[in-house]
Length: 309
Image (cartoon, rainbow, N blue to C red; front, top):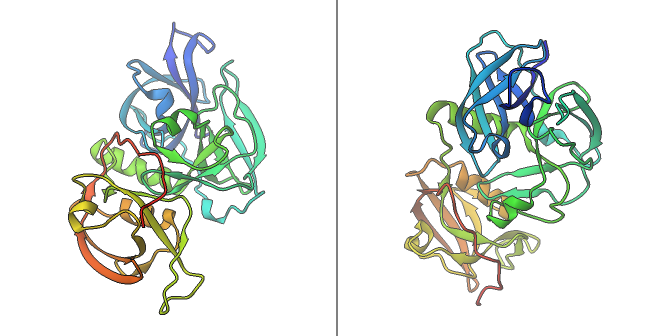
């Protein structure tokens, strides 16, 4: 049996399209855990899952993570088939993938596409999304993204225009379909299963989308860092003394070459843990220890502007 599933609210007993709010999901654990999108599961009470063998079962929403648009569901079944996991980082631009899921008409669908050759989109909590060059059909939100080896490499997340308005993602060309990499899906699902929420490290800085050249004599001329555009009031970054215009070049001994690396390192740090920040200010390098806070579940990201020098 396939690990794919349809997720929705039954309008009456029976097979879709008697369902409403129909989307897709993927079994990621044989104990009955299914991932889908938060867009689909948000504010739903009576959620049902239709398995490929025709069984329709009620599901409980274990937890939701708005930053990745992921929700974890649980059904009271064991021994469900789970997919083979691939490595999303091995997907080069133009790599072929297949998006497999349900549709709003209640039928299974499969759409061949590729990893789009464009800038990948940053998630505010750290990490990137996979850009797809195929339009996602209605009902394929939460569908499996599979490589040519038949391995699960991501979960289709649909268009991101709503998330942009809430400061959850940033990047270019956000009108097409995207997928959450499987490594991020597994990481989020593990935390949701354990505690019902996802905890991320938080410093409280708004970083420029592109890295900037550091330009110091003791650092390679091509080396770049993460430029701070804003420091949030009352944040760990403000308490440690970071300022607008500082350029972060390292975290706990790891060289930071671009904003995404910095965001990922901070987000993966346990709240309450301490990290050392290396940064450049007015041509001088500094290093300081800071205690990482916990990222708020809903955080408004200020509009980017040019820093004061």
